[in-house]
Image 1 (cartoon, rainbow, N blue to C red):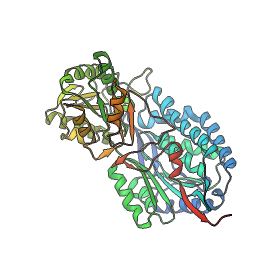
Image 2: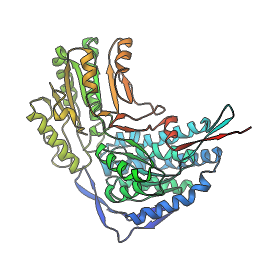
Image 3: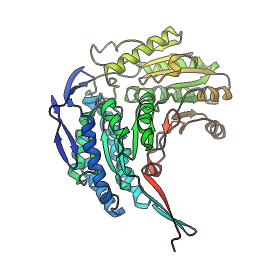
Image 4: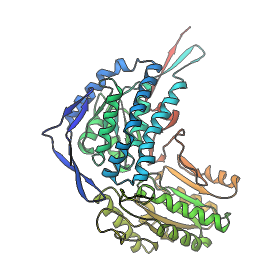
Length: 477
C-alpha cells in the first residue's frame, strides 16, 4: 500500500505528515490501495502564495520559452505514460486497454495540442489606433475529477502554462495516484518553482479554499452540477472568473430515414458508447431517441449490444468493461436502476446487481431501459453509469423538443442518412457539441456546454481564451 503523504508546493515536495488521512480504494477489489493525506486551508494558502510569487516572472516569459517548457513536459510525460496508465487502472478501475490508449493518451494529446496552438496563437492585434493585448489572467485554481484524471488536468494545465499563468491544483481524492505521477513529470521537466502547485484534499475543505481564495484570479472546475454551484458561490465574493464543465444528459437522436441495418448499427454504437469508461462520461449519449414505430428494432439492437459486452477485472486482457469508481457511485447507479423499474420503463437488458461472473468489486451490468418517457427520473438525472434510456418520438419536431427538455446542454448525437436534415436538427439542439453519424470528439475543437452543463470552453484555441485577460492600449503609434 502506498502512502501519499506529500504535497507539491513552490517547486518541491513537502511533507503532509500529521494530516487527516483517507483510504484510496481499488474499485475492482474493494480494498484500500493507498493512504492519502488530506490538505487544509493553510496548505492552500502556502500553495497560492507560491503561485502568486511566481506569476510576475513566469507571465513575462516568451512564447519560445513556454514552447520549450511544454516540449520538455511532453518528453517526460511520454516516458511515464505506462506508470500513469497503471495508476488509473488501480485507482479508478479503468481497463488496461482504456487506461493507456485513452486516459493517459488524452493527457499527451492535450499537451501536444497546446504546444501546436501556442506556436501561432495571436496574443496581440491592432485595431485602428488601439493595441489589443491578451495577457495571462494570473493564479489559476484547478479542481479536477476522477473519471478522466489526466484528460481533465491536461486540458486545463497545458493552456495555463502556454499562456503564462501559474497554478494551484486539487486532484480528486479518489484518483490521487496518477496525480502524484503527473507532478513528478512536471518536476522532472523543470517547471519553475511556484508555477504549478498541488494540494490533495476534498472539495469542502481544499476545493472551497481554492475557489474562495482572494489571490486566486480564476478557478476551473470539472465535476457535478451540484458541486459546480458550490464552487461558483464560493468564488462570487472575489468576483474571479469561473470556468466549469459540469453534468450532462445527452440526447442521441436516431433519425427514421436510416435503413434497417444502418439503424441497428447506430443503436448498437449508442449502447457501446454508453459503456465506454463504465458509463462515467459527462457527455455520454444516455438518452436515445428513436421513432416510436421502430422501438422494437431499437430494443433488439440495444439489448444485443448490451448482452455482448464483457464485464471483467480491469487488469484482464481484452476489451472488457471495468467497475465504476466507488461504492458511492455503485449504490447511486443501483438506486436509479431500481427507480427505472418502479417507473415502469421496459427493462430490456441488464438490471440490478453485479454480473453473474463477479462476486466483488463495483461492477454494474450494462443496462437498457426502453419505452422511457422524458419525465421519468432515469431520463432526467445523470446516472453516470452504463445505463441507456430509449425514448420514442413521433416526428423530428418532437425529437428536438424532447432532446432540449433537460437542464443540461453538454453534447448531443444525431444519426441519419440525409445531411441536410441532420444539419437542420443540429442547428436546433441547445448543446455545446453535436456528434454526427458516430463522429468522435475533436481535441482541436472547443469542449463545453449550454445551460447547467457549465460555462466557458476547454480544448483548442478556445481553451487558451479562458486563461487570458484582454487589455486595450489606446493611442499607440
